[in-house]
Image 1 (cartoon, helix red, strand yellow):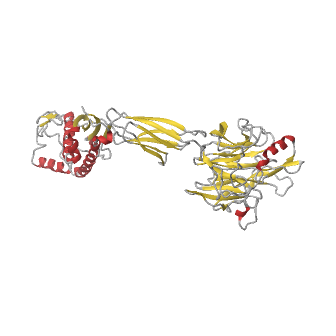
Image 2 (cartoon, helix red, strand yellow):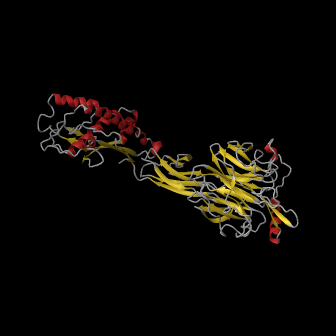
Image 3 (spheres, one colour):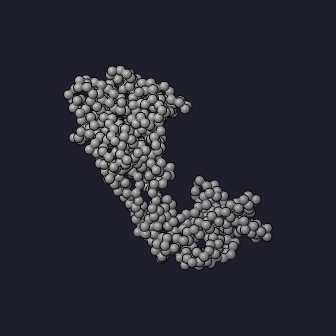
Length: 617
């Protein structure tokens, strides 16, 4: 089974008098003397004539867009006008309402969850005055930022030998300018038709049977110059064009080229050809597989999202040419493995999003670390692994490949090495401690410190003169520290559930909470001493006698210890803490002077919290 569809263009051939032949590409007719070679070609192409048959109530052909779009007349030349609007052409005169009937007309149809809406005549475009016009294509001029239109129409309507040229118009405000034919450097005295703009408007492709080509109808490219003019046409060469006919080119948003040709298989019908794009160069042209191509004429292909729309005269439609839709690419199946540190489960989710955050897939990681999901082809995606059991967001960036004939399998592996959750108080650029002091500068501790100074317990002798007497600025600092420690409390409390057997696996695990303290570079007087009570805490493995020599290393260790005790006192009131108390380990560490040059000295009086999940020792 092939895969969905989107844009279109079409063509018709018929034999007229015995002495001449008319090639009618959707009413854009070129009459030329009959040659044996041309007669042979047109005998093969006779089935492409603008025929119609008795309308069926329901189509039997797979992928048919249905009665809202297709009729017993010919539907062709689709173009994606905007995200949800399809512009296409039809020879169905009943849809033209009270207007003088034209040989063909352009119509809008809007895509919804239910499909495409009934056609609406595209009266806003200046096409009606050009009898036999068709193949409108649109782009934004990268220089002027104005919307432009190209289309094909007879330049000498009514002549015995009409010539088809490419016309240009620009949108000015709400209206379009009067169309003019492109210069003779682009158009020729022969058939030039079926223009298609590149997605960025820097060039366009078109079909022509002008002399000097590879053979029959070839595809040409015209580039926009830096001055805003158009270059001379360039034949795409014999790597794409063949001695047979190639026409109805289109370019997908990712630069892929699509066109119709008879030259890639030994068949008498047209197939849709696809070629990989690199800038304005294409390679690896190949016929699309069935059921997109068929034993009948399949033409006018272009991309609409992850689908391809095209026109075909295969049986089972409503008559003439109908529009069909299939997936453009096979599904992309991503499977992978998450490898986490020993003793930590891989519980979490893997999500695939694009660069603007649109989600394409999301799946839970299995207990063994494996995951699997499907995503569209031709997408640049960010694949993220997130888990409550390991810190951070782990990402891989991929471009999903397209295989028109089969599904594609991709393997990804996330190796998680870091297992520490870190809380740094970075958003609080303030001192967390009074200079020389070890209790965190909460509102309560600040008040107690000031009482000690007022009672003469600090600052009166050499042993405690290193402690700063806090000024009024510490009042605002204290409010911030209160808030910051509450954030730290929440940070630890939220990770207590990591000890749950159902979340991170392995019931034999422990949560290690480490508080690290820092001091600023200010030196401490050599007679300074620790003036607090003696500490002999077995739970924290922290021991310090009153009167111990005070250094920056000792000061930073005290800051870590007293911050840890403050947090423990708050957290041990939680039921979850009491449940897992025997699996929670508290540790403190004094790192001395903070040598981070990006911080001011006062902000170096701080602590840092690290939480690790590991196997219980």
